Length: 378
Image (tube, rainbow, N blue to C red; front, side, top):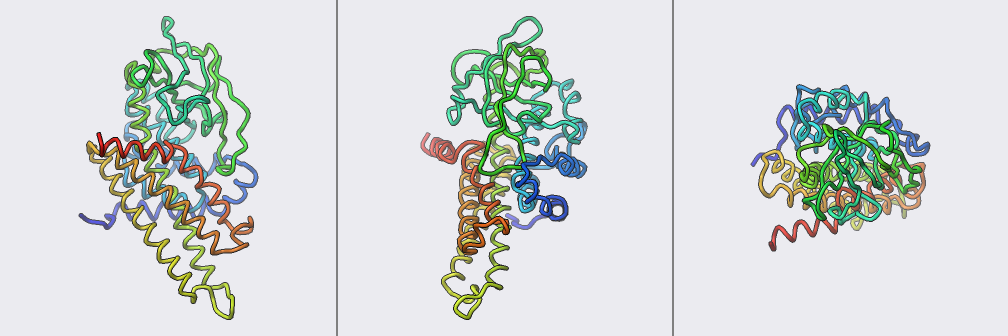
């Protein structure tokens, strides 16, 4: 049980940290303010292997593990949480094609996705199917050599901009066994997009409805077999939950670091804030809770790398704890900054807006508790 990173992991951490400090952090405020999707910065990340982190090397991936990925996303999130989160989703969609697509599909799509010549989105949520994902209604009916898709997906990150959409559809009976996964390319007739959502945070990535109206997709674009879709979607989310948890940890660490610096400079009642024991104890608690969440997330990542039978509940535990803890630490950092934490001259409020959604997406934290309790209670 070695809690230290090996030499390769330390190098990966340094690389991701340097990239975030040089490419994400100096631009995050402007991206947030202008609702700007930073394609050039994302492509620079892809040059470092960060668009296919755990994709196989023969299609351009870095073939790293889930613990490596957790290390990377924590560092990237310190620079811009919103952009790091989109990169996580792109990685998840690309990994699904690499893992479950035919060899022809892998070589058709993954090389352009791993360099971010093309961008990818994951399409599961629907207007009437959020936490109850197995009740999704978007249908795909086989008609000759094509599936014909009809339905809508909601809150899709990258929606309207992404080139590749990994879509969960209903091809059979009600419930999870009737769900399949199919890849849809932008420009396919019958594929359209709703208006961009006006969101609290995540302003550096587009989000909208994705609509299918008699959208014909070649049957070769099916991932796995008919009926495999729900399992494929959930396997994708196991890794996605760890990445989004790591993004929460990165935001929390960045805000904690800013708070420690602020408390050393800010004076009240003739003393700097870091001389008040009540505030010292709050910093101690924040640091302790952050480290505990990080340790659980890294353990869950190792279980996913090892394909452990309890990897899914551990991913749920880690996601629940990391995203709740991350938000709480960012919120506490804002409180310790006082009025300065609430204004946009300081980055704390942006981190707060960006991490709040992590408790909702990739399976809400209420659903994480359901996964965990079912594993324990049977």
